[in-house]
Amino acid sequence: MNNEELQIFLDSHGTDPSVWPESQRAAVEKFIASSAEARALFEGARRFDALLTRTASRAGADEAAAARVLARLSDLPAQKRPFWHWPLVLLDWQFAPAWPRMAALACCAAVGFGVGIAGLDRTLERYESLQTVTTQTDIASIFEPEALTGARP
Amino acid sequence: MDDSDEALMARVARGDQPAFRALARRHLPAMVGLARRVLGNTADAEDVAQEAMLRVWTHAPRWQPVAAFKTWLTRIVVNLCLDRKRRAAWVDLEEAGDLVDRTPDAVERMETNERERQLQSAIEKLPDRQRAAIVLTYSEGMSNAQVADILDTSVSAVETLLIRGKQNLRRALGGLIDEEG
Image (cartoon, rainbow over all chains, first blue to last red):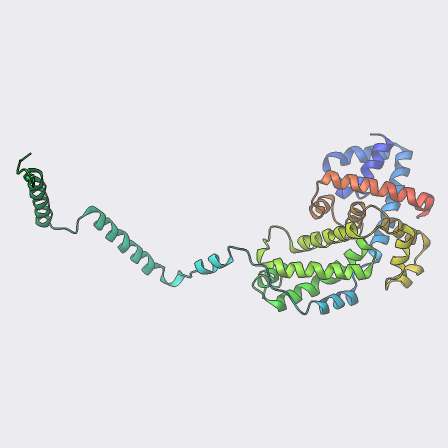
């Protein structure tokens, strides 16, 4: 490290060693301790920082100005709602007290759907008669004679 | 009742005006002060603070508490200040000094010592982002990482702003800094 690098370091990180980057602190402190010129540089930077802090902080909070602004905020415009606001409102159901009943209802619906899909609600005789009727109709239509010629296929 | 900034913002998001006023009362003094330090003008600072609080109100339903409320609000104020400075017509630096002197704290400023007055004047003449970095660091006591977050830039960019800002101030003040005891 040289004096120019020290000045850049102090300008970018300030003169409070407690906020210096951990990885550079020991090297910077060692350099400052090793040279009178570096110590003078550090002292100058410390004085400048103190002056900056004092000057920059002088125009502090202003209660009177804040009160004036607050008075101007009496008439507030409409808030901007995100586009997913209404879907969220509609979906904001509170099932907490009724969740066992909701779960039972969902189970019943699932079982009913399964039974309907599997055809378990039909009796065996009805299933067989339907098959027979269908078969007889199909055969009759296949062997029906032509309307004009009377020829059979 | 939880009256943290985040809890109040949750109420503001539901359109709760008293919660908004509580939040405004809590943060407006500091935000007006910050805007005045960046802009160097009390009237503009009040306009910026008002605009910032209106944005808090209108955007509250979309606000996500990923960062502290004060950090978010500070970012709004600083960005509005920088926008305003960008939009403003170029003003001669000597005139800019006169404008500052018309603020309510002009008398107080006249009573401070010459060194601080000259430094204040030099800070006001810095390029906008350098001035914002200096003000946030030395007036708000923020770390370089916090300043980077507010200015929406990298830590190394903030370090560069501070280095150049201080170099400009040293050039402007000459030997006055060395007289500081």
